[in-house]
Length: 141
Image (cartoon, rainbow, N blue to C red; front, side, top):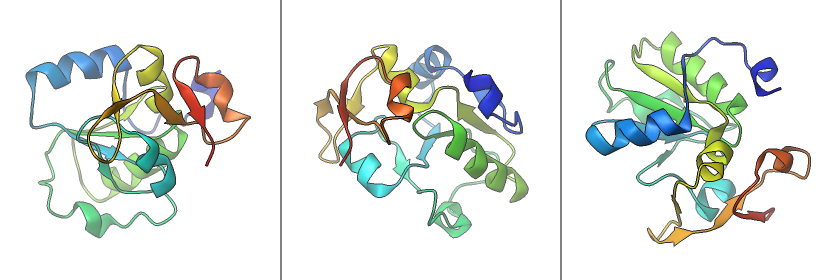
């Protein structure tokens, strides 16, 4: 079902692959394409907030064009749109986290609060989309 939501315009990386890569490559940049209230509930460690509605390519100009970038959102739809913008801006090493942060949490990988503490809470975006989040504590505000 998730596959049908994607345009497949940005290469995908699965949660298990990302976890392995993060363990061995500290140069990877994770961009969080959710809204600020979602990001503030929890995010992947060291993920950088870039937003979706208010995304501005200027917010990533400090990154070299060949930086390994992983974009994530709740399930991968919004992050694919941001990934497309990055590719259009000539970033050459961009991937979209398949299943988003929901998949990350469903695989028991940790998420962090804005003050860098591990949490079980995940912003579930909406009742409709929350069906994809099988683990963690769903938050809607």
